[in-house]
Amino acid sequence: MSAYRGGPNTFAVIGLSSKPLHDYGHPTYNCEYQSNNGSHFAVSGQKLSFQDFGFARAYVVVVVNCTFPTGTDSSTGGRLLLHASTNGGYDRDINSIDTIIALNEPPNSWHPSQFLAPPKYDYFYCGSSLFGNLSPQRVREWIAYHIRLFGTKSHFVFNDAGGIHPEVMGVLLPWIDLGFVTIHDIKYQEEFDGFYHNQMLILNDCLHRHQFDTKWMFFFDVDEYIFLPGESSLDSIMETLKETRIIL
Image 1 (cartoon, rainbow, N blue to C red):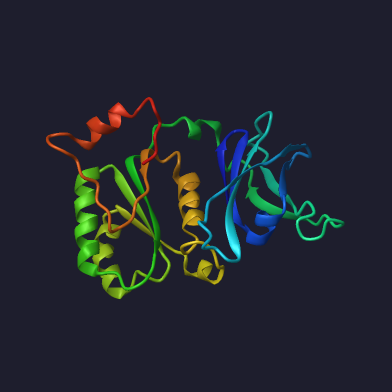
Image 2 (spheres, rainbow, N blue to C red):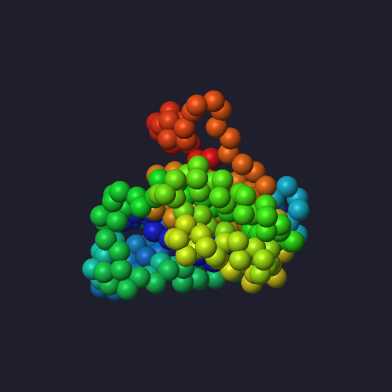
């Protein structure tokens, strides 16, 4: 599970939950922020669930948005609690509530200005879970093509679910050294039986972790390429989408 600030008064909590509970019950989530100065706020969490197309057997991905009426004090620090209730999902006569410490914030660990600062990157790639026997040559072609396309103010996050074997790592290391690539080891999540190596969990974590780092964020697989027709440039195409705030 992970949690990130989306602003002075809003958070996103990303995690896995019981698939049977969500299929047959009505779980609810409540958010509480406890400030280190003794004050606290509580609101109902807004749950987003994601389609697993019937393939997930044990777990589903849940994103809970916690938006409080006012901002919290960055100078004092505090912690975000998520109160997860089964709401009669297992036994109609029993309501089980688990309280999870979603986020701990030391004093002065964030500042409101960070949400308004110009982003570091123009383009940011959030990759799906990589698994299986990936071809080093195909990865070499893919990363070289897209770094040239996205330009010097770009960054790529690859999530290793067992697919980045030594030969693929050898291809990516030069790009890591140049600051274009980050690899996250997510092999531990393979023990939780969710849809497609918990792809939506990984992508939502990347989205909320890096949403203020870039102007544009992309989600697609390493067997897919962005093609620009004619003499068009990526910058010009994205400029036409600026007002729509579309995420590709």
